[in-house]
Length: 94
Image (cartoon, rainbow, N blue to C red; front, top):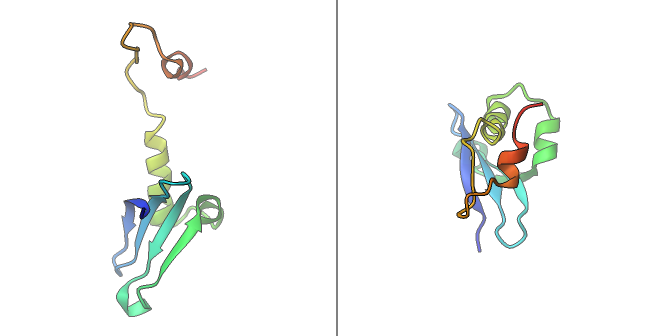
C-alpha cells in the first residue's frame, strides 16, 4: 500500500514537501519532491533528521505549525457513556 501523504509546503521553484506515513508500519517521515528542472527526484527524510537541519526554512515552519495544531485547545471530550476521556482529563495546561 502506498504511503499516505499530506502536503506541507510548495516552494515558488516547484519543490514540494509532504508529511508521509506508511500504513503498514506507522512510520512517519517527510517526503521531498524536487522540481522538474532539478531532476524531480523524490527523497524520504526521517522527521528528526529533517528538523535537526534547522527550522528557518518555510518547509520546516510548515511542519512545526502542523504539529502545533495537534495541541490547540480542544473542546472537552466524553465517551458515549458520558465519561471524560484520558485526553480531556490530561490536556489542561499546568
